[in-house]
Image 1 (cartoon, rainbow, N blue to C red):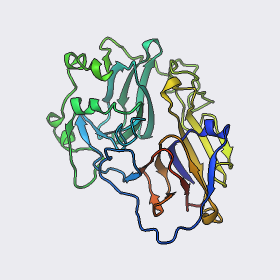
Image 2: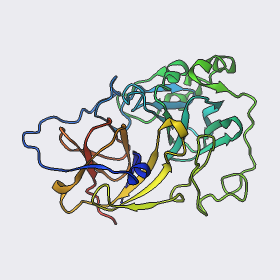
Image 3: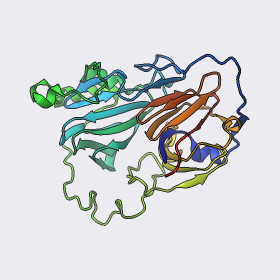
Image 4: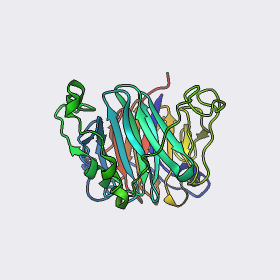
Length: 333
């Protein structure tokens, strides 16, 4: 089974007419999807492999990669990939945003995230070594913060994080002083140094009677509501209309969740390969789309480009008004 982490307006488009074209062979096709180390300065089709440079910076004990940013999406959203080689490290110090919508998706390991509904304060802390979290912020451009709080880091071996600060903690950049963080309001970072996270966790969450990995979780319906979805415990839909084959769609952020931020997020699980790849419909949306593979492989055919196959951790961006189709060659086992 292949898990795909994708940003599509799935629920919205299921209720509206969808622009589909039959996929027909293109002879003489010679243009490959650009495989880049860093995101481009304009919104265009591109692919970044897992642990590529992606404008990597070190901040504290964490490594930040930005495979998708405001420039490469035309200002729509930004990907932040947090990696840490040590446990019990602060990934995000207490803060709030007034003009950005942010969500976190745990890719590997464990992380604790606190959010307070009053003014929507947040803090994130890694628990396990070798953990990884994807944060997505809309609108794009929020990556300017990383230029201020981090330092550039380059690796020739594509390691997820630097071992230098594990062997010698003195090599870490250290936390940004509160006095300096308080100067970052122009970047929409409002420090909350007096925020005290709750420690009365039961079953991994608070309050103690909340469903967490033992019952259903529900999506928020406005931009003022923080909510958590345990993996596999959110709403799911079986869909065939968009792709011509069955896929399981689990929305994590619907058009109602972020309000005016025009941003959605879902996981998609598909089985393959389809019986007739040449008959797959093209899809075209009036907004940009990003895919990140969580498990298995994903093949994407963008109109005018050669097909390209992604594996775990790879990210591809498809701009708005661009025709594309996707499928997997992995069998359900």
